[in-house]
Length: 122
Image 1 (cartoon, rainbow, N blue to C red):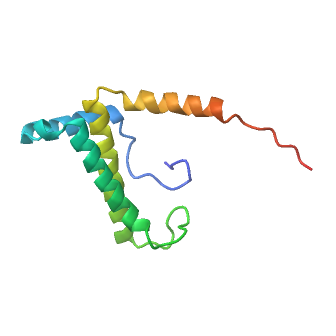
Image 2 (image 1 turned 120 degrees about the horizontal axis):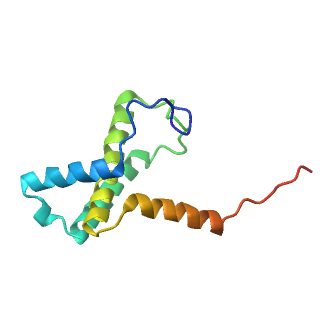
């Protein structure tokens, strides 16, 4: 199976709901949920976005699929992307929002805002 850019996927697609449920249980059994206010989760998310940005900071343009990256660099990127995703899911959860539905709604809004413009060959 490949992703939308033609690169192989390693595992089945995981739902946002499954990730949300696992995160909630992970925090709950450790007693961390008491610290997971929207503000704290947002600040943690921003910190993780900063760490993600550092990976690309001095690389210039990077080709799709990261063909010149080492497996260690790709693994580091996966970890930081995962941190960002997990905090985003937790933030939406504690705010009582359905992130998946919100994302789908945003795609529809963007499609209306930026309609396809027919281009004719000249």
